[in-house]
Picture 1 (cartoon, helix red, strand yellow):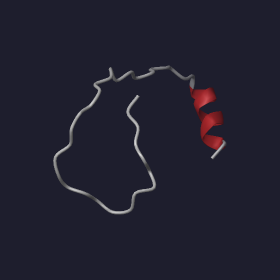
Picture 2 (cartoon, rainbow, N blue to C red):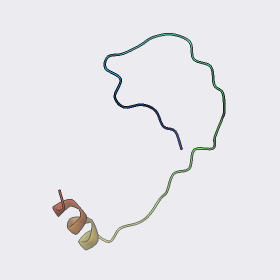
Picture 3 (cartoon, rainbow, N blue to C red):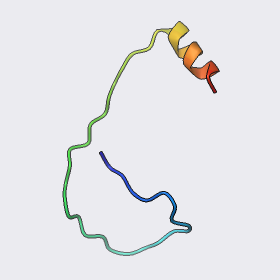
Picture 4 (cartoon, rainbow, N blue to C red):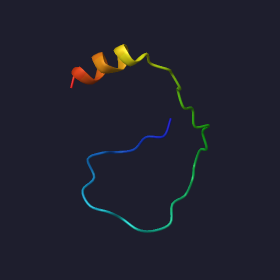
Length: 43
């Protein structure tokens, strides 16, 4: 999982050093339309 600190204001430019390379895992799930509508109604 890729993560970082979300409290940093602004934008920074520069070089970065990759200390550890992790595999990016994407969880792909299929939703039935009725379940998707219920999930959207939560918000």
